[in-house]
Image (cartoon, rainbow, N blue to C red; front, side, top):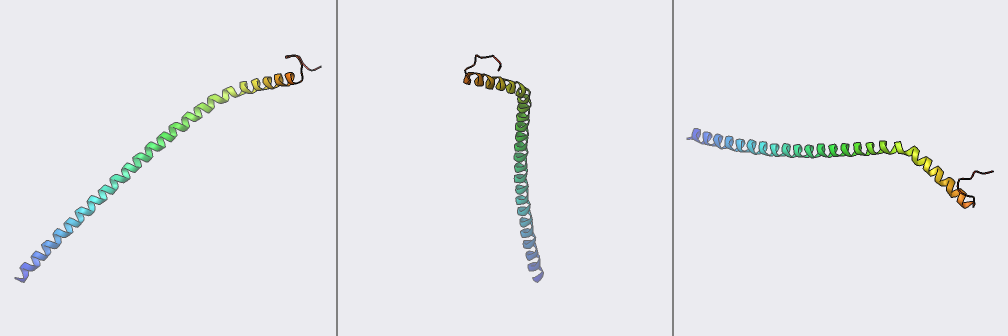
Amino acid sequence: MSQDILFITLSICSIALTVYVCRTLYYLIQILKDINKTLDWFQKTLSNIDTLLSFIKDKLDNATSYLASLIDLARIGIGLYKDVKQNRPIGKKKD
């Protein structure tokens, strides 16, 4: 009789332990899936940032090629403004 009680108690404990281990594994797997989703999102975000920075770099590289021309145009415009301000005909040099 006491041996039957022992076996029943051991079987109940083993069932409880099995349920606990299965539940713990289930939650561990769910946590790992969430971490994987977060890392995928982070990777996509970094990829988008990299694409944006490459786009900006290309635009700046293209803009610097026009910078010398813009400076020359600005110099001519400032010269014309000074000529108009001093009431000289446009294009005449100082004497």
